[in-house]
Structures are given as structure tokens and as C-alpha cells.
Length: 114
Length: 114
Image (tube, rainbow over all chains, first blue to last red; front, top):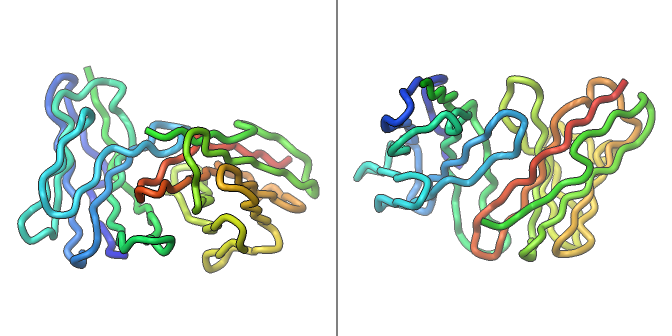
């Protein structure tokens, strides 16, 4: 699986949009970009994933560059409860039981302050 | 999203004893489950991948005789830490993958070995 690079930490004011970048310059054609977050002492929570098109759900938006070498997770209106470690993970999804594994990097510690 | 539970959430044991952690997918069948370990202020590290009805595949450096994994049904996987020692104290997190490729995580089990 391709490796990802994320800033170690970011701050965001409550109510503002949080834009979390991720570089995945070695991503291959069949690899998806996944975002998870982990609130302190809990298991990771799935946020969103995408292949090449931008994606949006009730939690966030995912913007993937045209060359797919980087992406940005957007939390449109950050709240204090969004304070967490955010992980960007690239994983191959070839189908069947031999899916790629989710390999976690260090992630970005997002702190939302009042 | 799909729900994955773990039991117990916390366990304290004496050095040399064995501890079993259960992971259940509550509302879906998981052909593949994963076990991760997370030390304080570190990221999740994949320990092993288990497919229902077959032997687990361990990551490099993980002792299969120390961390016994059983995946006897499509909704239950167990991790047994045998002859636990203080250095095994960690946060153990399981994850289950749905047929639709999504992977959901349990809330984690905090193991403390005295």
C-alpha cells in the first residue's frame, strides 16, 4: 500500500472549516483514499473514502487532486467534538477476501478551540 | 455505520496469566477481522489478520504463539494474550470488514499487566 504524509498537528476555531491535507504521491490506480479519526482512548471511526472523484457525506468532504497525489479532508463546521487524530490511509480494493490492509501512519492531531 | 463491540473494555491481570479479548460484529457478518495494538502516543499497529475458519496471518515481529487468534464464526473473533507480561500492556483494537469493503473498528480494550 502507498504511504501517506500528513502534518503532525493543526488547529481550528470552532465553527470554521477544518482542512486537513494528505500527500500520497505513490498511490496506484486501484488504491482508494480512506480517512478515519480517533478520539482519545476510542477505536478509529470511519469518515469517508474516495478513488478519484470528490466525495461528500454527512460528516465531511473529500477533495482528491486530479493526479491523485494528494487529498484534503474538509470538516465544514468544526466543533469541539471534532478534536481527534485524523488518519489518511491509502488502500487497494481489488475485491474478494484479499483486500489491502489499513496501515495507519502518525496522522494529524486536530485541535478545535473555542 | 456497522457496529463492532469488544469485551472487556478494560482488564487488569497479573504477570504470567492469560487474557482473552472478544470482538463481535453486531449487525453484519465479517469474513475478515483484524487485530491492532496501540501503545501510548503511538499509532495503531496491525498485529494480525484473521479470516473466518482459517488460521490468522500475523504481521512481522508478532509472536503467533503469544497472541492466539480464533475466528470461529462470521461474527466473533478472539485474541488471547498468553503469559502476559507488563510490556504487553497496551490498547488492543479489533476491526471487522464488511462484504462491501468497509472496515469498522471496535472501541478497544485497555490491557494492564501488573
